[in-house]
Image (tube, rainbow, N blue to C red; front, top):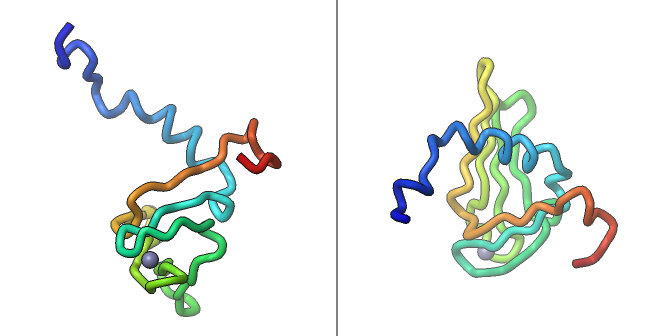
Length: 98
Ligand SMILES: [Zn+2]
């Protein structure tokens, strides 16, 4: 079996993405790409101005930009350039401290 037999069109990820982004995101943990600190997204520093189309989430330890959110027109844009990874709890595990 070669890799072309495992490769699907990116549209095949739609169901998985739909499952991931319905969960509580403030509870999600992420690793800062700059300092390596791991923390819940809800404990990071959010910068936004009233009526602005977006916001910036910065690392509470080094102020690296973790995420950029923009909602303009009929689109959302989410930049995750400052995270090495983002871990989102499956609803089945909510309430456990795994
Ligand atoms: Zn950091």
